[in-house]
Length: 135
Image (cartoon, rainbow, N blue to C red):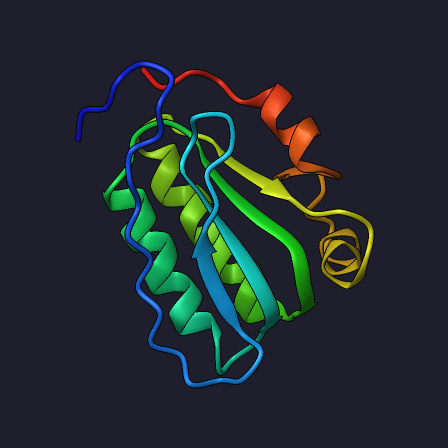
């Protein structure tokens, strides 16, 4: 998919979850496509997150931003979904940039020893500063 320089490709977010309080929405950042995840990511909602990530990866170029600022709970299923997305993006030399401020989700990454494996940023501004141009 081709886009104008500096502009994110449009990303269609498919949400089929019936879980209350869980949502994935389009949230581009500084010209990069992105998703904002709200609520609890667990065994019930992880399949919806995986589907949204796969759609976003397939329909975009360059880095993909995932904003977990409004994620109240993240279990190993959610971590797996993000690691899987990182692997898919890595095949095309693309970045996965995760906005994950201090809180429950960040603590899961710290306990799992994933803070050096994933590109985690405290804020959207910090994540935007780290983005590489698509190419």
